[in-house]
Length: 351
Image (cartoon, rainbow, N blue to C red; front, side):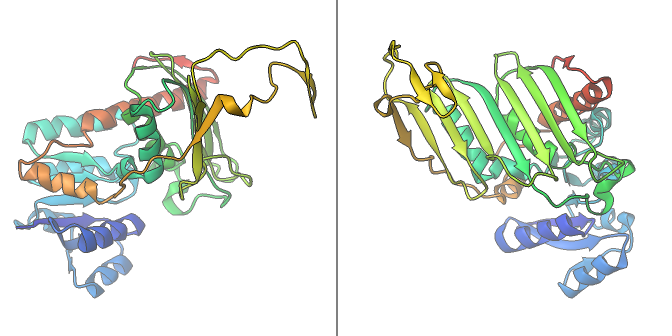
């Protein structure tokens, strides 16, 4: 029997949850919706969904065993706690909270009630990310030492509640959460240093562009960047490893791997190479025969595996993939990003 799901908040992401779960996840059935606005409630009714008159009405429905929260960020904590205490399992949209201490409150209630709690970090199933993760796990080009992860656009001011501080708006808490979650899921080491630069180009209350350099205890440096005012985009991923470089250009996953053809040391010659920038030996082009180009690996990517995992956990058939403890690490990194920006210098951490 399918698990019955109610969605609280039926805006853009709420409707995304409905469409994807209803069409592609047989293990979960979306029964109904609650939203404080009438327009999305009318939309839900037109789709044949039950419309609840209040949050309490959702929580009092004995058929509902999963509640997905897709409201503005500042409402996540209170709804999650109330839902778990009402006996419901809870999925929260990201960012789960605005600061890490609020997530710790949620986790305490999850432990108290014994209910499942997870965060919709669906971009762990992005194809571009899974490609990079496979390259690193397979050690295709050896050990990494520097990774750049970017999402860039030029649409300007943030739309709706995402432009307001009280709602937990801004790019660190929006796209940044995804990129940071991917980072911590992929690099098995403690974060020890964070240097963040936040910009408010078109949105005065919150960051609409940011860059942060993150240093891991194992020596990996990792640049995370989100931009809404960039008119010439850089690659989605640029990964430097000890035996080569991997690039994923975009979400279509165009890109390549260039690796050392062998471990022979490249001989230095006395001849100076003349380039358009003048004479050089250090930056002279590498002889073609010393490298080989590889195609990016094939991976299977499906966002709906998040919900399939939730259903399998509830049925006692699997371990939870997106764990609250992992999300707490992400939120602690977020706290440190804001602290670094406020202090205008890097800060040492142990996350």
